[in-house]
Length: 80
Image (cartoon, rainbow, N blue to C red; front, side, top):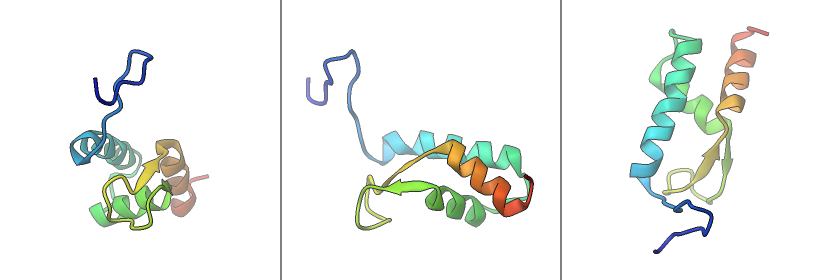
């Protein structure tokens, strides 16, 4: 099978794979700070992601760490 890792998992990519993960990460940010705008959440998610592509708009452009997103949110909001 194409994308098989050999460990019982399949490697998949694309916006349909990322949409649920990004939506979940954004939902967690809104849970922490309901006053956030969509633009704020996008900025935080992008700022706390590790780039894996030269263009931030390219598919597969980065890997997000939701704990880093939450920490950045707390730092920006002065909640520490």
